[in-house]
Amino acid sequence: MKKIIYNRICFLLFCSIAAASLLLSACEKDEVGAPPVITEIRNYAASPSDSLVETLRAGQWVVVLGKNLGEISQVNFGSRPATINATLITDQSIVVQVPSIPFDSVAREKVNVVTVVNSAGSTSFTINITGPPIISRVRNYATAPKDTATSIIVPGQSINIVGYNLKNALKIAFQGVNADLAGAVYTDSSVIVKVPGNFSGADPLLANKITYGTAVDTINYSIRIFDPAILVYYKDPIFTLLTGGIGKEKTWVLDIDAKGASTKFKGPLYFSGVDYGWDNQCTKTGGDCWLYDPNYESWMGAAQDYGTMTLGLRSGTAEPVAKVNQKGITKSGTFQGSYFFDVKTKTISFIDVVPLNTGRDQVWSKAYVINLKEDRMQLGFKDPNKAELAIHNYIRK
Image (cartoon, rainbow, N blue to C red):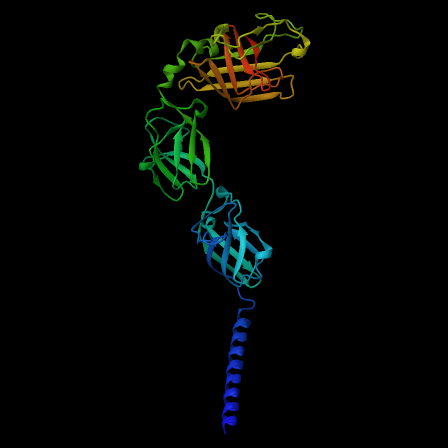
C-alpha cells in the first residue's frame, strides 16, 4: 500500500514539474521576437561605482539594462548611433559608449532620447544627455521687442546667453572677469546673467571673449565687449605712434627692398640678448643685453617684398585690429585678427594673426617692442631654441 501511495506522489510531482516547464517554455516563446525594453542605465564600472546614472555625456561607457536586448541591431543617443561592445551583450543588458552629439543640429525633443532597436521593434528611454557648452547667440535681456540678438555688450548689462548644455555653469567670465553666478537664471536652452560692471582686472588675451565653463568642458565665445573706460587706455600717445590713434591705422613693411637695401636701419634683421628691450636699453642690471646689428646678408632671407602689416584702432570702440598680407615665405597669405599692446611692459600680443616676418622660426604670438617712432618700429621675437631675440625692423609704408 505504501508503495502505491509513493508512486502516486512521484507521479503527481512529475506532472507538476512538467506543467511548470511547459508554462516557462510558453513564457520564453512569448518573449522570442518581442521588442526591446529599457528599465535603467548604469555606469559601466566595477561595484560600487556601477551606480544608476541620471546624466550622460559623450564618450561615457554605460550599461543599458532591460529585456529582449540580446538581438539588438542599433542603439541611438540623441539620434546618433552609439558604439556597442558586441562581446558583452546579453538578453538583459548591453554595454555601449555614448556618441558625440551635434546638439545644434539635433531636434531638441530628440536630444535626451535613447533608442534601442531589434528585429521586432524599438523602444525609447528618456535621460539627460549633455556635452560641452555651446553658445549660439547672445540676446538683450529685455521685454519684447527689445530682446533682440546683439553683437556688442557693455559692463553691467543683463544678457541672455542662448545655446546648449548651459545649465549649472561653474564659470561665466567676460574678458577673464568672473560674473556673479548667484544671480544666474537658467532655462532649457539659455542663461540670464549680468555682465561685470568693472573690467579693471581683465585679461587682454581674452579680449572680446565670454568664457563658459561647466563640469564637462570650458569654451570661449567671441563677442564685442565695449568698456568705455578702455578709451582712456587707448588714448596713450604710444598708440598714435603705432596706429595713428583711435579711428586710424598704420601700415608697416620690413625695411628691405628688392635690391636688399634698407632706408632707416642697417638691415631688416638684428639679433640681441633676451634682456635687450624698450628704447634700445637693457631691461635688467647686468642682463643679457648684447646687440648684433648687421647690414643685409642673404642668409636673412631673399631680397624681396615681404608684404604689409596694418595695425589700427576702430573708431568709437578703440578695438585693436590687425591685418597682415604676408608674401614670399612658406606661410604666406592674408591674416586678420587683433593685438594687445601692453603699455606697461612694452609688449604686443598678437591674437589670431601672424605678424609680418621673413620666414624664420620664432615665437610670433608675443613681440617685445624695442623701439617705436612715427616712421619706424623694432619688434623682438624670441628664438624657440636659443636665448636670443630676432629683432625685425619695420618702416611705415
